[in-house]
Image: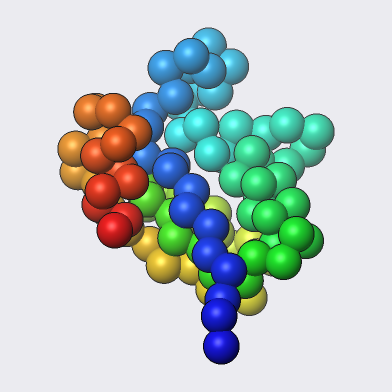
Length: 97
């Protein structure tokens, strides 16, 4: 059986949104009442993806806590830590590999 997977790079500090984020990691910045990460995950799931790999770094524990408390807990998520999150996105993608 083949499963669809989605890689979400959520390790950066979101410098370009810093003015609007109030210290939240970019995936938790709200848009239309919900965190950006929730929008991405629900839309991708609606498209048929059933597994997620999410690479965390900056404030990653905050993202995990949000996910655990959210209604998305039924989704299959593999968490990957990127301690080199200050480097470019390619490093996050390699960590997920």
